[in-house]
Image (cartoon, rainbow, N blue to C red):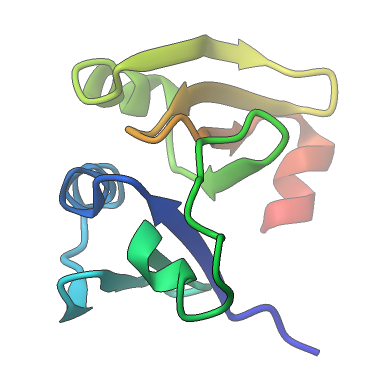
Length: 131
């Protein structure tokens, strides 16, 4: 089994795609007005409007951001990213903080309220894990 994609459902797909384009720094590929993807080196991040959920099952249209899942990105320097992100993200949950497991993390939300973590390994063990 191979994890290939993460799909985010958005109430405002244009705002969500614009946000992810800014934070990831790569252009999206639009397949329809309700579905776009960002192809990174490690995973595809897909963004679909709530309309796309109707294709799976009736009644699957009421989506809001979640505080139980965190979308994580390994970045070169989380402190530098914070300076860039604080003008883009509407909600910063945690400014860069070194966590007990050795990562320095920045936690913020996308336009739909989904949590995003930008992190940089800083302890020897964490650096080894991600190298």
